[in-house]
Length: 540
Image 1 (tube, rainbow, N blue to C red):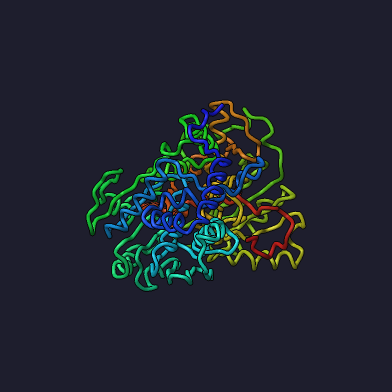
Image 2 (image 1 turned 90 degrees about the vertical axis):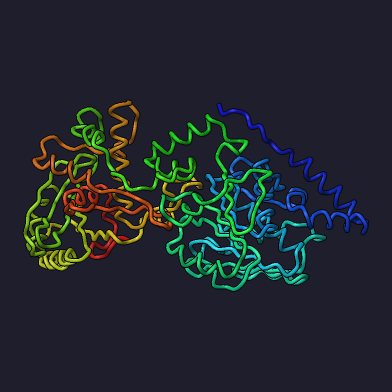
């Protein structure tokens, strides 16, 4: 059982206090006194009047809209933002996952927009949908629209809320948004917030644009490797704690650790770490929870001991033979490259061969011959580049009825979007990223899914953890090319791009393309619903 929370706001009392204040503010003198206080104290205003939103509470019948009661470190974050603004200096918020840092920045922006006429506040993120997407509370401007809508009428000005723009008609203040390389192009700003700024594709150009347009930049982000602008700014910055005296033209760093959240215990940390480990996403946990800058650096995707555990795993784990035949064909690009064909039955890789023929027609026919004794069989083929010739030949063979009906070829495009794009990497976990946001392409997703199979199998063999057969992999010890397959599976490395997507490097310097490894990867990451669509079409 999780440790009891040490921070549990009594929302009923907060609501009762707000009602009493509204009654009090019917007096003009009391109202003017309050406004004078709120003008100088954003924490007071936010805690008295701002509402926040958490849809995750709906499943348990809890409040989805509730008063924004700041816990201690959130109050300090608001104070940090205020001090950066007053001292005209830059701030950087290095944050862990799900601590409300962006909500705090949005609430501070709304306070500034209400009480400081003529203010021009900017917000940017790496892509447009993260800045503004109507109806999506994951977007920054939808958060701010909800914050404004939740204010009592006496504090809510006449305003216009358009796409990536909110105008205070009463005092001329504005909040505007930009995305990607357009950040900093929209004119001068009193303060500019850059959300997830460690993940921009061209941060140097953004920095150059903003340096001319604002005196106060606030970077809010989880970490993403070393060497990027966010990391360099953080390393060159000054750690801030309450009482730190700020100077102009410096960067002050606010660290928001998971331990700063009053509802995060060590037990919570240990359980979440184990959960992400079980999902094969420990790198995401280290990066977004532990704030580990090195978590996104290049490293082998599959470990050697995992492969050793997978050899003849089906002899130790029952049920792995269940399932249909699936094969994969990786087509040679030329030169010293080879074609590779592999086949599995259920979770067991039972066949692999390679050859040097560069005629894609011959390659396609050889692949057909290699699987015709194992029907029904679905063959995934690399359709990029020279692999496109496989389609033409298999179409001809199909038209001439030279391919059995139970053998079907499916185009597998390594550069296409991860599938399904809008599904969570960890299904049904809304804190998990979407496939399209986490993986740079289908190739990265395929290699990472293969990694998860090997890791699951290793844990099943060494720790006795139970998994479904479709989550596992077994390499037959009778495979003639087993040692070469092992070598090629160890070759690819993974890292994260500046926009936080997982990318795979199959050919580190001095190495050849792992054709057998690619074929194994495709074989275990086939079309999502095999055999239910036109085999002449790509499945993404």
